[in-house]
Image (cartoon, rainbow, N blue to C red; front, side, top):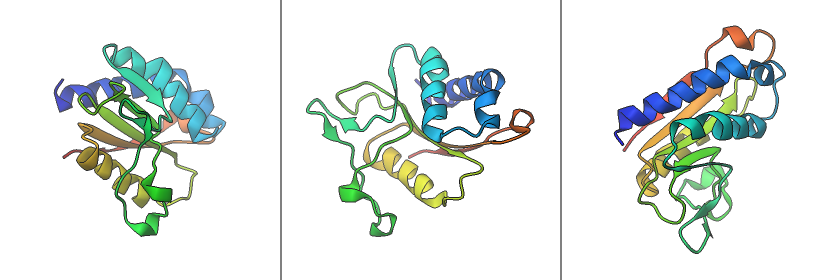
Length: 153
């Protein structure tokens, strides 16, 4: 699957999510809840030949924790990371198609860590495409579009 196809499929899932699930955004629910709904109801429909997981923290056939070599300033414990959404084949790095991080626009945490983490996923764990999505939240979220940033090798 080409990177352009991966991006188009993810955007199609995101568009359907925005149209169908705007109440979650207007209520400003937790990003984990939003990620689970987006992954399991919408992204999964676009990637039927791969596994789509939310908050998946394992790698390889032994189920070791996912780890990235990130600068110490980000404070990850032993480099352990848990991506919000991944599209992959479980058990190896041969079919790591997409890794996504989500933030509600009301979340005041820096986006720098998520951006650095996504670039590291692409470079270190061989994900083809990384995507950061900042979702509208609160009253009127339905009328606003998410901001999307792409990461590639």
